[in-house]
Length: 122
Image 1 (cartoon, rainbow, N blue to C red):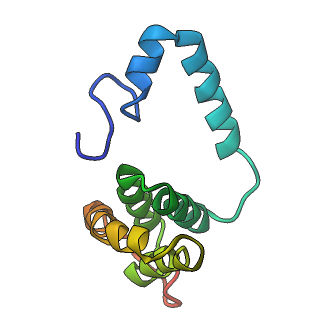
Image 2: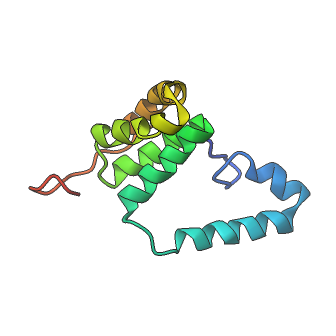
């Protein structure tokens, strides 16, 4: 699937091979990731933009598209996405940001649009 999810019920493409060989490791990692998601953190839009920026730095193109889609679902604008990508450039250079833009646009365009209130917030 284009977003990296699999028909076998796993969210990420690396999960099935890890689970097949090391099921207890996969279960432990899933529990660890669930705990990260339960931490007190910035609101969801900021969390997705931070995760997307980390994906830009790691040059994880699937992660960029996924977190941009999720950010848009919770109210991020295209300007929010581009601004977050460009914030990575002072430390990590322009190339990763330029490579990220088409994948970011793909994820953004695949997300369902959200309605916003009068302040432009969702």
